Length: 378
Ligand code: UD1
Ligand code: UDP
Image 1 (cartoon, protein in one colour):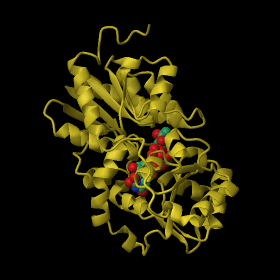
Image 2 (tube, helix red, strand yellow):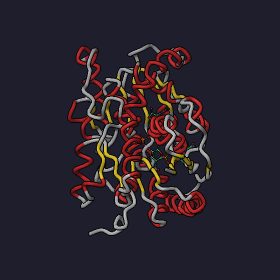
Image 3 (cartoon, helix red, strand yellow):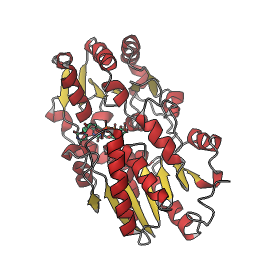
Image 4 (cartoon, protein in one colour):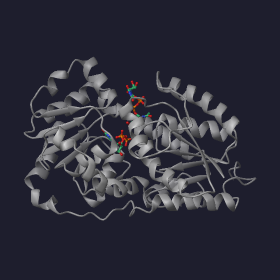
């Protein structure tokens, strides 16, 4: 089977890594990997291939400038050309980025079956480009891989055929479980920055609905200013740009801040594992925090990862100053509660990637991916 996979943004390299590892163990899938170029700094892209020992993508389109429409439009045109040359039996897209929707749309128009990893999640918030990308991609697919009952039910409620859905665990959990020991052993990130385990908060913040809106980013930074604890912040290029444009660098001018460039995966896992609290607006990091048993506070008004809230591993605070401070203080004041906590992981136990690859091959062999009626909705 010839499988065409599409990546482009940081979380996609991480989600795809254990899947690619599984594919490389077999000899019945020939892989063609297209990188759209959406993320391009060394520490937002190449570093992950090097660290995780992944083969370089077969092609990098280098598309990363412009508005959402420009990006998706250019990707669509170039991905179509590659699909016509490569003639794959199926295409695998992942997550909710502009690269995801561009890949899915290009393929379905050529009647190439689309497989979507991380289907069915819904924030129901159309202010987020991710919600639009994920929803639309789901409705182009012939195999929708979900990582929770909630996601599966969302798809069924939207009229997607049950037999097109495959529910399993989450490859991001596989990635953490496969790499945590290596990260603890090999990463010297704490030493490099003079950090002590459990004596800092780890922050990531890059979502458009936070950092592109001055009031929201200022509100978050004001609340962090009031916290009396070291904050480690590998700053995303989008946020760095916005902070400079808004002229609000002063918020970060305090000894407690460790502002660093985005780091590689092993360093980031090490930073997560040794953090007292993780503060984030990332999607993936909410799951990784739970997997590493570190309490997470999410700087968003909603989350697709509702299980993290139900389990008590995550608290939603939006960009509201009082809520952020209260949530951080609640955790700091209740230290014992979190010291040896072990949450049951709703996203699996590390076997998902293998199951996904086996399922893709099974469906391909049994002709379920591309049936004569698979492009007709009843
Ligand atoms: C994208 C995803 C988001 C995901 C995030 C992961 C979409 C709509 N959004 O957001 O879901 O959470 O990736 O990190 O696809 N930039 C650099 N260097 C890089 C990467 C980006 O300078 O290596 C700059 C870009 O030029 C752009 C800005 O950062 O100015 C935003 O990049 P973009 O890829 O459009 O969106 P993200 O915010 O990264
Ligand atoms: N990550 C990383 N280095 C960093 C920040 C994040 O390796 O400096 C990893 C993190 O471990 C997780 C993924 O990037 O696997 C999350 O990606 P991001 O937050 O950019 O995207 P989102 O999940 O919000 O789409």
